[in-house]
Image 1 (cartoon, rainbow, N blue to C red):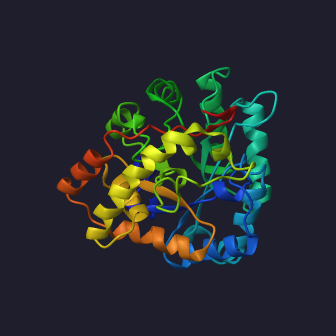
Image 2 (cartoon, rainbow, N blue to C red; image 1 turned 120 degrees about the vertical axis):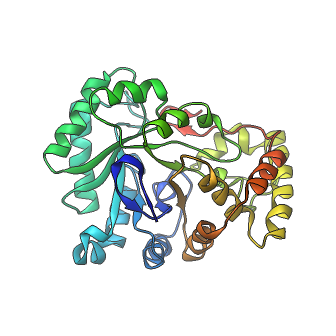
Length: 322
């Protein structure tokens, strides 16, 4: 457990993420996914992250159903984080205006089946909406009791500074893994200076760092990775050769490469939480074990030496694949 920066929330260092349950990663079995969510809770995870854009409510509804009994029995024991302000495929993919955010909160409350959201995050920065409007709208929703804490996702330092001028951004959710390290230069120093709670997503590189992919791996047409150059051709082959070296390093320490990747993110200064997705109970059990992996400074340095020549990986954005 840790305190999530200036939000003050006490959270598990591993959060359960539900991006994979919204339809952007191909098909999945809902019953098995539900068991994974419940297994995560039984094993001590108290923070669950979802988003309006993950299937336009599909992911939120599944999460709400999976946790329904616990939410009824002891609401304060479960922290629900969701995100809004984007509409992938729409005429305006990013919309952090007051009206769309307010409607998004109402929709999320209904899909989740809860009376308030513990942490509401602006999913992506919206250059067409002033920060004053976005931050002000979230403060209004806090004042009304519909959300308890407000954060942002995928923001840089300039965007955080503009938001903070109106009300504090209590948390930031950026992408971060061994093959995607740009946040170390911006905005991590700002987050550390102002005690912003950082929840990183895709700590296993969207599957690259699980050890399960091969150079022949392919992805379903409805899986965003099928449209990413990081998951095809020489880029994929090059990074998988690095993963093979990481596997050997991990094996010497009695862990999997996926556990090593998660533990590396948690060992980095300023990172509070790693958000991990899972489609089965076995997957979440493996990931949770990473919270107990202790890496020395020497381990971290060696991991970073092994991955120094990695091809940097982008990801999905509201407009498509970056």
